[in-house]
Amino acid sequence: MRLVRVRSVDVLVKCDHERQLRCGVSGNKVRKFAGLQRKLAEQEHGVKSLVSFGGVQSNAMLALASIAADANVAFEYYTRTLYDEPAGNLALALEHGMKLYELGKEAYADTFNSASAVATFCNSLERSDLFIFQGGACKLAEPGCLELAQEIHADVLAAQLDPANVDVAVCSGTGTLAFFLAQGLAAIGSAIRVLVIPVVGDESTTRAQWQELCTRESISPRDMNVHILVDRKRPFAKPRRALYGIWLELREHWGLPVDLVYGARAFEILFNVDGRFQQMPASTSDAPRQLVYYHCGGMEGDVTQLERYKSMGLDQ
Image (spheres, rainbow, N blue to C red):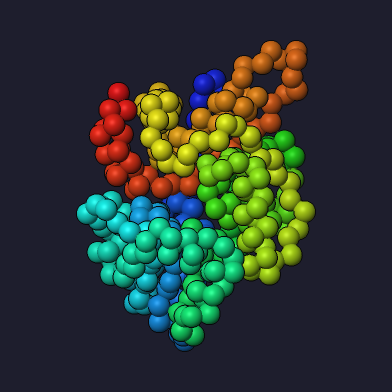
């Protein structure tokens, strides 16, 4: 971890954006897909094809394409109908040999927008197909997240901090890493609290994602030490001038480059609702808890996102 001062607040950063595997996968995907990589490294893993679904610029899609190519297995990906030429993460994933299947809006919703529909789709797959839920939201994400929990706890102790006075802030898209990190910290008896920052939806969305994950993967969850930050809901990944300003501020003023979709939105929420950034007088508040920011990476997706900002005149 390294120390960064952001708006007069000392933030310890867990730098997973600097962590990269041989196949090029980096950031939180290193953790979420560690179990998958180990499975594919087994001599007789029996997997001929990975199958998943999601958005056309998904970081998870690109990571799975890289892992599949490295393991010499096929990768089939389902998304909504494209209206532009492949670019960014999609173009890179196709270069890795990903097979792309485009579905119309209604067909996509009918196939993937409910647990029963996904179950029906999975039943149609071959035994040699391994289905990975959108964003890697499956039990295979657990081993890597447990290792992350152990590392963060060790880092906190090495910094001579009291784990009971530490918050580790985690962006939440599918909620998977936040959930398994909190489960991992509970499993090792750590008092560190997970500060969940929903970038998709809000608190109810995140809790529903966790419930769906536990039901789908037959998980009996431990009690978790979590706090979910609540802010005004915003459309996911929609360009906004305020977000661009925060992205630029973090990069140029505080030496903390983050991605435009998750990182910038996470800090917008922290700035809006987290007391550490509200500059409350010391006499009216307790000593602030130490903030650890889990840097999940994802900056490879900025290529196409920046193009959107420029086309809308929001990059100034």
